[in-house]
Each structure stands twice: as structure tokens, then as C-alpha cells.
Length: 452
Ligand code: PLP
Image (cartoon, rainbow, N blue to C red; front, side, top):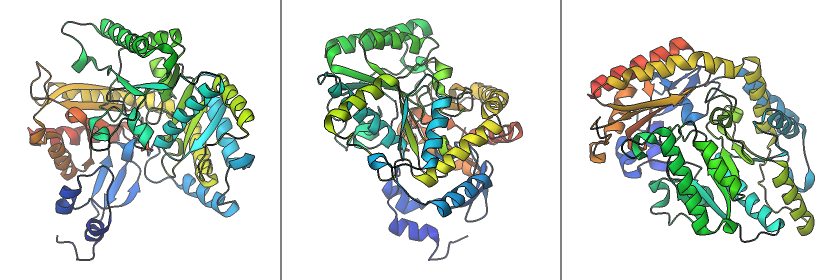
């Protein structure tokens, strides 16, 4: 059907500069216009329904219509639509939310700082670390290490943390003082015959060598997602974080867990840190914090970091960082309601129950001629397409194999997300049922067959 001249699609091409989109291709192909959502599905402007296999951007944990969140937002908007937290002002929603996060933290945390996005949370964490080290008299200790293929956002500092070429190339990033160490992906990065254990040991040794080469007195923090998401859904070897944390401890380097994707049940525990054995000094989260219904993110800091910050701000007179919308009351009220719902429906128990259906269903595709590795845990997973199953070589990018699969899948009623190395991500709304998972995996298998 030809869309009418004034359709949303035509107006979009004429007016919107899209995030993460090939602008020229978009002028040619136009957008997919989504008009409404229901459960794990969204609907386009032609009324066609799609299972959202990545919960939007790994975030709509409660699905695409939850009336309680609508009510929570409406009630708070009527009561107090805005107030800020500068110079010690506050309101109940942000206090409730801070308390709830501290009660649920994977390790003892002291205080919560609020921002609006994952990028802002990670940017804030970097600034807090720099401020902290100035405050405690270690002004040299400022370098930050993250990992190749890690994803931490797109602001100047968080994009520098991110370890993906298209976030750096053409943006003149990373900024100075942000370094990248190896990716814990055994499938691609292990040496021939290297066990997972030996691979993890080598990565920890490489990190140690990097810190020693830089000078431990100059290295402040290590940022890591428990499971790397946007870099390809990469599950590290079982002993990886134990070994990494021993290195960090030796050099007094803070650990920041970026739980923007993994937090709130995604990995089968409340936090990815619990699934992967991380004991962070600072934890950032966003996305499922409000089931993504309103933008809000949080940075939790432990007592040690808070005490340094507090001493610093006592000396300076103010901690000069914060956003107009830090702890926005409506976003905070929606997040509070979200966390209450997670408790009531036992979101972690639900994920544990349904995850095997997704993990086993995807793994059953491992024998498909186009599939190299299938990986995942909880309700996060990826299916990687390869040209050569023996060498694990991916397809020539010019073949655009993953984008083609994404397009085919649309005709099967699936919205897919392709990641680097032709990996297709799975991160559906956490409330997905086993029947819906089976439907999703069956449709995906059919799309794969059509591509083959
Ligand atoms: N950290 C992780 C692990 C993410 O996956 C993302 C976004 O996908 C971010 C940070 C950035 O969050 P935002 O897009 O809200 O800035």
C-alpha cells in the first residue's frame, strides 16, 4: 500500500535525524512507524504486530503497556510534576527510590545519585571518581580502563568508555586517559586450544600488565558490564571477574559495574553482578529501572566513595555536578512503582523459570548452517551468524547478512536487533511467557531458514 503524502513516514524522513541510523539509507528506505504496544508486542501504522525481541532497547521490562505505571505517572504529575535536588532540595519519590535501590543493591552501597540515561550515569560515575581521587589527595589517579566491545553510552566520556569502532571513528574519540583492555569472548578471542580458565587468567594478566605499564598510581577505575550487551551479548568465562577483581584490588582500582542492561533480573539474578560474581564500588543502572517508561538512571556509590566525595564537597563548598532532571519526581515515581511490581510478580523467579525455554530454544538453532555460536543466560542471549563454522569467521560485511535477516524477520512478525559480528540479540520484555518465547524462537528459525 502506498502511504499518503503526509504520512508519518514521509514527514519523518523530512524532519528527523535518527539516532544510530544510516542517514542516507533512511532517506531511501524510510522508517518503521510504531503506533502502539501491548505486552511483548508493538504494532506498526499498518496494524501489523511484532514481538519485540529486545524489549525496545533492552529496556521495556514490563512490556509495552502497563496501566499501573501510567497511573503512577499521572498521580505524581498531578501532585508535583517537577522539583529538583540541587542545594539539598528533595521530594518523596526520589527518597523512596533511593531507599529501594540501596535495599536491593548487590553489595552494601551508601548513596544514590540520579540522572536521566545510562550515558549520563556513566559520565557521572567518571566525574565522581575523578572528584573522589582529587578529594582524597590522589590527583594523579585518574585513568579509566574499560573493555573493547564494552558499551557504556554515547556522551563524550561514556562514548570514550565504549569500546566499539563506530562510537569512536569520526568523533575523534576516545578522550585522553581512557584505555581499553581485551574482550572476554572465548569464541573469538581465545588462542587455539586455550581453556576458558586459561583465557580468563590471560585477560587478567593483560589487565595487570596494562595497569603496571601505565603506573598504578595513575589508574582510578575499571568499568565493566556483567554481560556485555551491545558489543554482542558476551558472557565472560566463569572465573573472569574473580581474577580481574584480584588485579583491581592489588592496584587499588575501583570497580564500576554498568548494570544498565543487566540490572533488575535480566541475567536471572536481580543484578548481573550477582550472576557474574562482581563486587562493585560503584553501580550504574537505567533502562529497566523504570521499565523505560520514563527516562531515569542511577549511580550507587559505596561508603568509601561517598566519604571521599563528602569530604571534597565540604572543602569546596559544593559537589558541582547534577542535572536539572536528576531524580525527576515523575520518573522516580514510575521507577518506584516498577520496582514494586518486580517484587510482587517475583521478576527474578519468573526469569529463572522461563529462561531455559529461551536458552534451549536458541541453542537448538546452533546446528543451522548459518549459525556459529549461540550464547546467553537468563533472558539475554545472542545468535551469531558465521561464514565458516570451523574458523568462526564472520560474513563479509558487504553481504549485510544480519541487516537482511532483520528485514526478513519483520515479515515474520519479529523486531530483531543486530549487533557487531552479525550477532542477533535476544532480550525480550522480562514478563514474556514460555508460549511467547516459543513463538519468538519459532519465527526466528523460520526467518533464518528464509535467509539461508
Ligand atoms: N550502558 C549500557 C550497558 C548500555 O547498554 C547502554 C545503552 O544501551 C548505556 C550504558 C547507555 O544508556 P543510554 O542509551 O540510556 O544513554
